[in-house]
Image 1: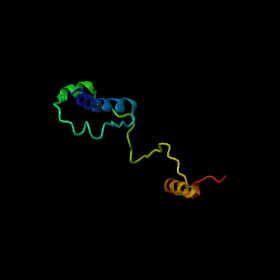
Image 2: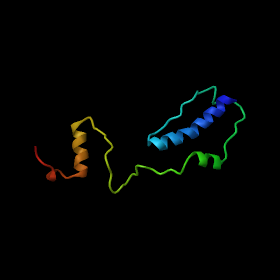
Image 3: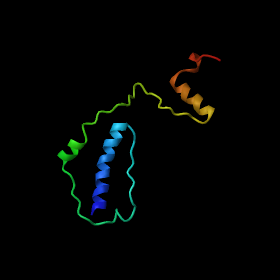
Image 4: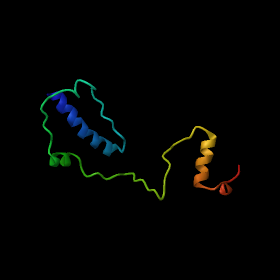
Length: 96
């Protein structure tokens, strides 16, 4: 029984970790034994979860009117030129 309860609690903890670090979190578990197990589980009520997880305050907000690059580096020069041309017209680019 403890195996299933631990896995259930890990999912709630994953939300807290992801929100504190501003990183995606993936919970991986056994693909057969635990998913096909039949054991009683104590599901915490919403108040317990809310007490454990403080209100989410995102540190990064996507602004569709002012998009920002997050470090993407295209492989091909043609892709790079296409991306730049969609943001700033080529006539305004400095020539090197």
